[in-house]
Figure 1 (cartoon, rainbow, N blue to C red):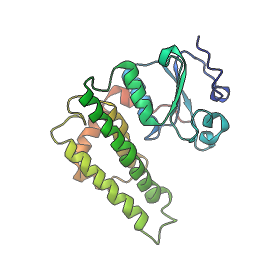
Figure 2: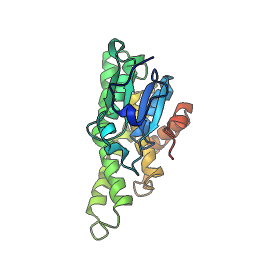
Figure 3: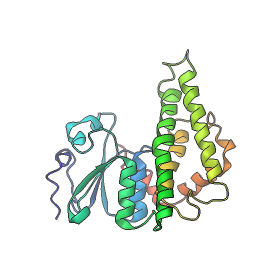
Length: 235
């Protein structure tokens, strides 16, 4: 049985199955990337809910695993050389899990780097811009009621990013063509999240991006996605 006692986070969220990957997360667009990947890869894992309502992500125990105080984070008891490893940042975790299993990432060097480019596109573009759009559109609307600039700025940039995806997906089933990869898993939860969590699909004019909408619909039909989108279960 793996010994995870060197990870302080396990004192607050004990591992009942320490030989399984420990997932510390919440079902947000960033969080579900990892639960979806774990489901797609068939890896054994134990989810722990990190509640924003009680600022779990800012607790000393959580920050001991992720100094940035953001979900998701994992501990893999069977990391490199058989030793436990803790990881944070969803993009890094996706790459780690793909390389650990040899799945969801093309075997060829060219395909691998192209996939990683689209992962970085999400990390540096889609995630931050859609997140800021959602903040000003839904959560801070009252604070900017007399100043439409913040919402409009992030709305317009989010629509520009949607147009990039729309072009990329022309004639493609997935971002890498026929192969479903971590680039898809990194990105489509944000498109769905802007509709589901922010109610911003009409403002972002989703109807003008049919390739993107068809791609998201295909992803949402995957059994692993249906399960992973709801993990960890909210209280």
